Length: 115
Length: 110
Image (cartoon, rainbow over all chains, first blue to last red):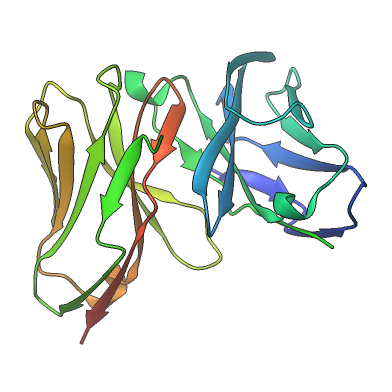
């Protein structure tokens, strides 16, 4: 079974631009979660989508948004990029909630650099 | 407020030794406590996880000990191997919303 696929692997953007990251979950998984990983803050939860609906949202500004399509693929968008948005963005998929026995499977991330 | 605190930040262990990483959490509503292993350039991979109604869980060389009253849990890696050299993260949460510790960089010396 193919794992979680994130594209692109690397991105370089300029302050003020916007960016869209893509995530293809494991086949059959309906939940997609997004996390931001930085050396200073570690892994931080952005949001989770389940069956095309946002189920949970972390404490990030409205510049960070996402969506999920009917095939469970998900996109994350960051508008008006700031230098502090430079990070590794990780997508994780699962059948349902991890705490109900469906573990999170992470992709290898998209490394975003904002200059 | 940091929801999950992890220590130590780094750990060096001899091959065959025991590696111990500790975590403490704040929110008693959390109902799932996973540990992840991450290698450079890769996403975190689930190692082992525990629910708060169990005090210990063992899978191969990896054991989680859980103390609900103290709001603490720890990962023990027995017979540590050089291939275990990686960064380890504890996490705590509910559903699919998890708070992660800051990570422990483990180096196992041959």
